[in-house]
Length: 225
Ligand SMILES: NC(=O)c1ccc[n+]([C@@H]2O[C@H](COP(=O)([O-])OP(=O)(O)OC[C@H]3O[C@@H](n4cnc5c(N)ncnc54)[C@H](OP(=O)(O)O)[C@@H]3O)[C@@H](O)[C@H]2O)c1
Image (cartoon, rainbow, N blue to C red; front, side, top):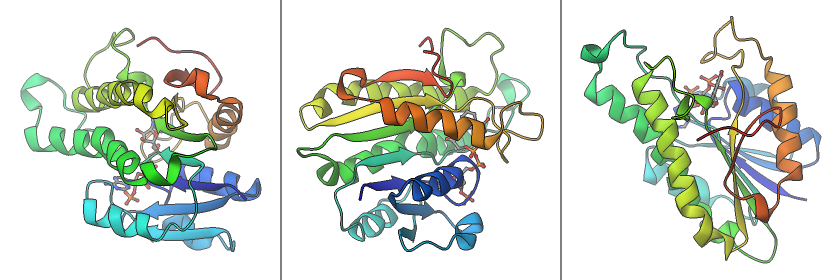
């Protein structure tokens, strides 16, 4: 049985990954920050739930210490939007730093903490749930300053880590889930959660070491940096 770890699994895209992976016969370690939300409703002996705040190294250490299997798949999904500031003068330092802490550094902390559980003879995949909003080439409308910058930084952290990790059989996949109907995406988002996760699951299944560092949308379209 393969083992997956998912951050921000209490609701939204993370919770959909949990359901999908359990259905496909995976053992799933699911992290929730404060409330279990949807995780509370899932009854499955292969689901192991634990408190996990990706900004807190103590929380990560306790969560990781309860994982008793090699990790085949890490989905770094936890993320937050920024303040939707209307202009440059409204940018709030502390909020911007919090967004970068959660969205950029959080995934790096998880990779660092689970590195030894992922490296080995079998290929392990780290999925970074990034965003097209992190693409510099695609940044036509601007705004969402900190959110955009946090995802750009996440992309660069990932590409910078990939060469080293190749030697340890760890591969990275940077995914844009589309604009998805969740609390973050809002009601007007055109993509349903199951469509997005179906597409991303297919990409994860097809992924291999040669493709490490690919930046791709849920429907398979490669994205510009
Ligand atoms: N929805 C979209 O259109 C869209 C588009 C592009 C990219 N994304 C990315 O997709 C990912 C999932 O987004 P979503 O739409 O599913 O958002 P969501 O419904 O708001 O869910 C976000 C999840 O992240 C968790 N989280 C936030 N801060 C955390 C922290 N410090 N430690 C651990 N967990 C934390 C939340 O937990 P709590 O319940 O405790 O708040 C929640 O479970 C994010 O990385 C987001 O940037 C989403």
